Length: 148
Image (tube, rainbow, N blue to C red; front, side, top):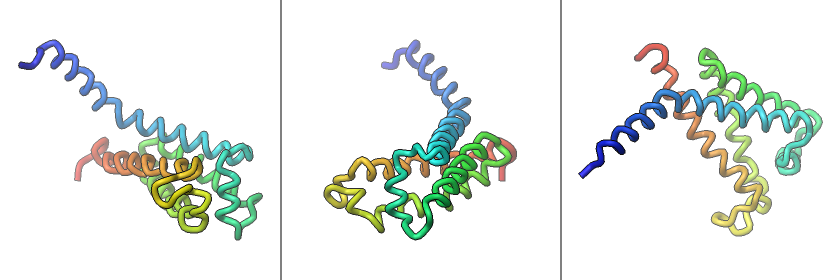
């Protein structure tokens, strides 16, 4: 038998999450992109060496600030509902580059391919969560304005 008090608490919590969850997801993903992009702009990113070894055909002095600005742009556009479609586009254009180390430098990404990721590999794999978050955010754009 269900406990009515727990049911009421559960309903309140899930209603709160439904009301604020999407907004908080946008803000938190935005913070991640602005923070990591800023680290690249300041040449303080822990992934700088991996990027330099992966995108070796472009000068790091040009590419790192470009990538940093790109990531900050993703984060900033996520903060504004009217710009969410732009942020999702920027994110998905960046995605192939994010996965590039797996193809070009797998020895840096794995201790044992494919199930033993290094710290760098784990750093890249966590991007799957960001992609999933982008799908959720993108799927709700129309819901907040008008329906199809």
